[in-house]
Image (cartoon, rainbow, N blue to C red; front, side, top):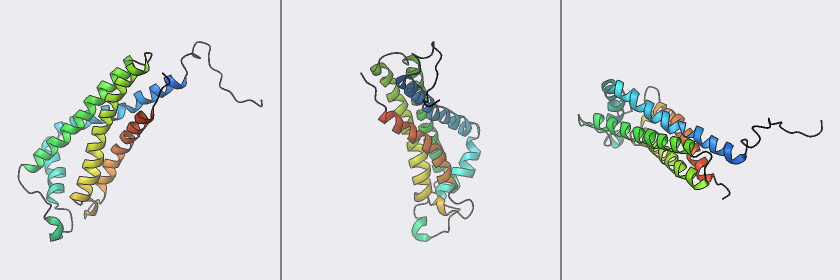
Length: 185
């Protein structure tokens, strides 16, 4: 056989198109901000106090760094700050989940409809990805990592940044794919 081809059952040949498969790819990518947003909310809400005490408080107080006085001025030691910080994290995660879910539902409902109809759902999915990039990219990788210096922690250095990157990358990829996605009108 000198020709390479993919045989498609007759009933599926009209469904397996670049437009449909690219739309399905965006639907799958919408699962990242949606699921991680809601799972982040559930995980933080069900273990709120321990997360405040064991994760957020030591990070913003910079207790696990090397104690350079020129850097320690960034530490936030107000007793309410860690609670407010976690509420902020949870809020942005939740918004990523909500916007991702709206986009997911709208894209699924509009899979066979016009490009404009599908694009309305895609816009919501992109908003979910933006909030995910904000919390896990900017929040964990930049603010926790470099502002609060978690990258130089005495124990488990880079854990905040690497963990944030694991969440950030698929969401950033979803945002990039959705931004580049164009359909013939």
